[in-house]
Every structure is written in structure tokens, then in C-alpha cells.
Length: 266
Image (cartoon, rainbow, N blue to C red; front, side):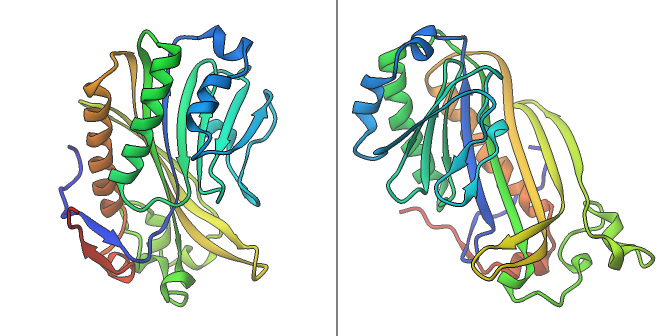
């Protein structure tokens, strides 16, 4: 744990726009050479919408929400099979090198984890991977000030100086319209890649654009990783690290504006 430990909260104004959990494994040719009929039959009740995506074709999540293909790719020549819920809020993606679950309707980690446990049990029963070569859990938060009634508040009051010193500079802060940073960190449980900065967020319904702050944190471990409880122990650790990292990246004022309530187990 390299970030200060914080009490777990549930944000009523949740800034999460996407959560991805992906497991990669040594190539299983059966997946690419044969349509995953048996796999679809097992999950079709929950994920009834099917799409096959060829290499180098942009992936779209649901209706107008574009999902970056890099989030899911295992190898550049993979064919992806996507299984999507009827409300377009959840997606399972399968290729010869990876399996992933994606949601834009993330509420609690326990729900997310349980959904993936069910998918992974089916996947392992059908395809029997030898081991996993990469485990990753990725959280994307988008801070849109107008959504939090902070439209007139300077970024320097919301994002700490150690995260974005340019937003605290009297000389240039008001002129900054875009920024992009990558921070890679090594921990005992794997690596963390944090991509963050100012981006243009577009509201399609209102047809307006607004500067927003993106915090894109990817927690992952590479190497020969056995199946079973260790996978979930690692993901549990990443989930806790993710919320501590997010809290480290924002100020108390922003934390309060998102209306946190203490987490209670149900």
C-alpha cells in the first residue's frame, strides 16, 4: 500500500465513467477458430446482444459511448467477441488471448466482482486456460465541474498541486486547455499506470463541451499467475488501492462535493 489508507465511501455523485477488469492467458486457438457458441449459451440470458469485431476496427460500447480498443486488446490481431447486456451498461469481451468485463454503470466493487466471478467460472469450465499471464483492473474517473455545482471553482481548489502543478501556477493556470501525464509506479502486488490530465468532455444531449479532469488508473500484474483464489485476492487489493489512489488525487473540497457516504456492508 503506497497511498494513505482512507475510509471507504460511496459517492452519490459518482465520477466513474468506466471500469474494466481483464485477464490475459496463453493463446487458445479454439476461441478464434470456432464461434463461442457454448460460452454464449451460458451467459445469453444476461448478455443477449452479440457482436464480433475484427482486428483494427474501433470498438463501440452501447449506443454513442465509444470504448477504446486498447482497453481490451490482448494481441493486435485478435478477433473480439462482445456480449452486451440489454441496457448496454455491461459488456463481456472474449478473444483468443483475453477475457474482460466492462461496465459504465459501476456501483459497488462487490457487484462488479460477483458478475466477473460468474463469467470466469463459465470461461474456465469451457476453455480451461493453463494459467493467466496478466491481471488488470482499470478505473476511469472524469471530474466534470458543472455536474458537481463547481463550474466557477478553479481547478487548483479541486486537484492537488503535486498532481497538477500547472493548475496552481498564477502565470499559466487560466490558459491551460489540455494536459496529459503518465505516472508508472511499482508495488509489491504489481504495477500501476496512472494517466491523468485536462480533457474536453462533451455533453451530447446539450451539445456543449467543458474542460474536465480525467483520472485513469490501471492496476496490473504480469507473469505466470495461477487460477483460483489468488486472482481475487489480487483484484481485492487493487480495488482498495484504487480508491486510496483516487482520494490521493483530489482535494477535500472535491471529495465533499461528490457527497460521500460511509460504506456499509449489506
